[in-house]
Image (cartoon, rainbow, N blue to C red; front, side, top):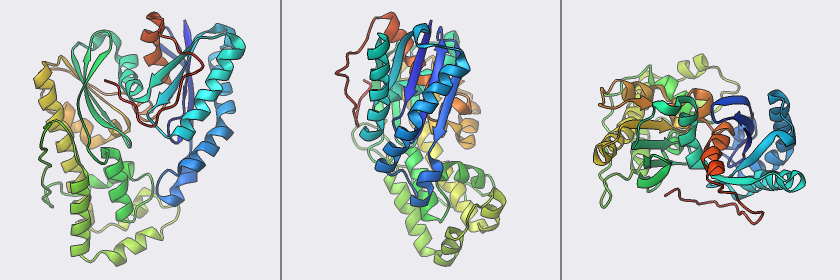
Amino acid sequence: MRILGIESSCDETAAAVIEDNTKILSSVVASQFSTHAKYGGVVPELASREHLRAIVPVVSAALEQSGTGFGDLAAIAVTKGPGLVGSLLVGMTFAKSICLVHGIPLIGVNHIEGHIHAVVLETGPQIQYPALALVVSGGHTHLFEVQAGFVYRLLGRTRDDAAGEAFDKVAKLLGYSYPGGPLVDRLARHGDPRAVHFTLAKMKGNALDFSFSGLKTAVLRWVEAHNMDAEIAARRKLIDATFEDWLRASPQATLDLLASFQYTVIEELMRRAIAAAEQIGAQSLIISGGVACNSGLRERALSARLPYPVYFPTPGLSTDNAAMIAAAAFPKYQRSEFDGFDLLAHANLTLA
């Protein structure tokens, strides 16, 4: 049984064909990094236009690479939210059109659930339930209890910036290129994570919620106190810089700042994830989303000697992709949870 997945929630146009929820037959992603880099972040209108240009060739490539025709598809899965509405509508409208013409069932998938299924797709029966899922990316920082049968309960979420967003904003503040998260991760390895002391957030109400706006402000105050304007201005002039260029343009104090910032973000994530896992008696810990690629987070989680296994997706399935959307659709297909052509796109959509 094959399902075609389509993902267009933000700035990647993606399509993939999954067979029997175990085999990725194709996975094609068209990135928009070069379009948005000059603005230091995703511009929604430009993202929608790029999706319009890419959707047909991306889906066509996914079908061709997998040797799949429309008649071979059991269903088409498409991201329904959360995300940028204009971007979501491109993928949803295209998916609906194919379903209407070829008589194929349509399944709308929550993007956040897709990130969880990125791990399930690769790990399968090894995951024991209940599991604790930490979904952490540029747009999301959530903690979910995942029960057998994929029943979800929201335990905690960010009250302001997502963790990945905080990485990108701090990188932009310091004059680094977009997207800043991967670069901060690499540079942080050259700094001392204990050099700058940042206070961990103390949450009123739900202690499992996150907040990164205060940390971001603390970095800004540190920058202002250390007169870094000339250094930052010099970095902003770098064009097509290599990692070695960025490293040479970063004094040791700046590398220490980045290492300390990353250390604090990782501590925020792991302390709450471990507390939530203990609260629900988790048998597994799933960490997914774009920030799951962060080497510091992986090292911290895998070296923590937790009483349950920790599962990460491979890097190609950590960032936005359509394989995870198709994978999340398989349980829905088995339960005959199909959608009509009145399916709507949602900028904000809860999973539990």
